[in-house]
Length: 102
Image (cartoon, rainbow, N blue to C red):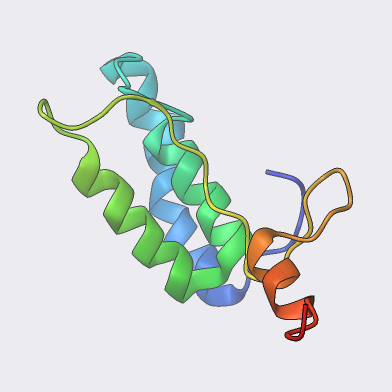
């Protein structure tokens, strides 16, 4: 996590994930189909999107984690209106900023 503060609701939702990572994760092993792991994805989604949307994204991610699901890199989508690390706006924001007469 980048150190950004979580809202109180997101902090409460993140608490069981942190307990899982501290206590159970070392015993379960590292058999994740996705990168980042589901627990890392959930914490990042709560940080980037807050409690409501972060929780929804987390539920969708956990639902995809089954033997017939996909695998590979599955990053948390950027927050709406967020900028990419290279400073460019995301595609949705660029489309809104375009002149409609072009």
